[in-house]
Image 1 (cartoon, rainbow, N blue to C red):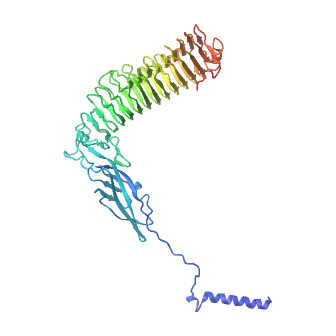
Image 2 (cartoon, one colour; image 1 turned 60 degrees about the vertical axis):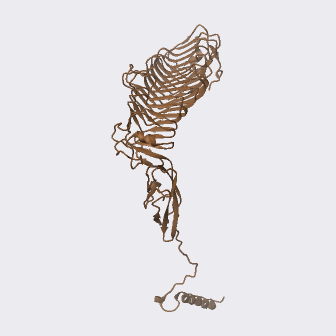
Image 3 (cartoon, rainbow, N blue to C red; image 1 turned 90 degrees about the vertical axis):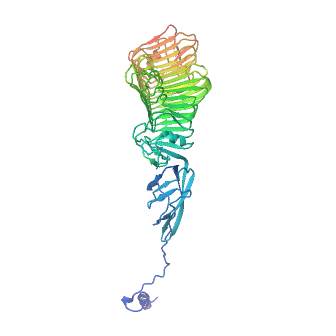
Length: 565
């Protein structure tokens, strides 16, 4: 393009562009025309989503906003515009703007009840359904309430007997602290199958709190369990028999409950089925000496028992039996027990428990498996724990770990007698035992024992292992520290024509080791070395202690020969 023509073209383009933007008229009449696509704002209606909550018959549920009906909704600026103040079954609803609400069913109603609410904004509405489901009723007791109540939360009974009579399976009897006395709450209580007894000490909590925890009400008992019960938040004092009875039923939980001064046992368990759990309970003095705090008697009926975080204390001057006593008789049955986190204490050596835990299996066949850990046992007349089997066809096994046991007046911190299963004994601290800290006896049945990383002190013998009355024994003793044994840090005795095989490594001791072979079968010790045990001395820290050998020699076998884990 020639220069003159280009100049004319550019001038025309500028003039046309100016005309396009200016239109007609001066600058005060300037109009900008947007020829692009239009953007139209989009406003959304709120979205309400259905909800479901647990309820309890005869009680008011108060749901806070953080868990209320709005938590799963999309508001889009909307608010609650309406709701049903009466539910589908006649219940009363109060719904607040923040989504919190209260629901009170008609007295006696159990089941599902619904109500609706609507969210609204300028762009629309959305309605959701709330379902309240109860599977049982609550019957409330307050001994300060006027006579004639119907047992609802709003109008409680003034006596416990009214509530237990009105209850049925699936119901909960809730007992308030009231005036702190047993007025209206004394005497025997019979819980029907499936009825729970909850005291204010635990509060009444479902998916939300109905009654906050407070002080426990005072009952006398006994409480007779009908099966499938929970007893919680109760203070039982002065029963004229046992405090709690579980006889021929199962699936019972005793939780956060205290018991003192019954004329018999705190808990009497006979032929329980299913499971029995006792946790976070406090057991004080008995009025009569020689009785067990918790007695379990099972005749040919298997069950599972759990005892956790309980306190057993004796300060009365009465010499009680065992804190927990388990007796099994009859024919084959299988049992498990968890015994963990409990505290067993006596005031002085004249008022001791016999054993913190006594297990005595005299049944023909079956099994017993124990898990015991993190218990604190202070002062016992006989043993900290005594596990004993009389029949040779019962398998007893388990683990005993991280317990603290001290001041045993007659025998051992741990005494296992006639246990033909496998036991792991690790991480325990045992001090001041009249005889031995740990005793393992075959009693005709043998057994396999793993004894590791325990701290043992101040006993006649730290560890005693004896093949008595027959039965093969396989024992691994590893990494233990044993101090101040007045006779032997460890003593191993074979007295019958059965096999004995031991692994003894990495232990630290201050007193002698003893090996007495009175039997005719092999008495094997891995890496024992020469006749005087030079190999054993090399793989343990003896601190000047000696190795004593009886009349018959010890057979040194290679590492791994005992095939112990």
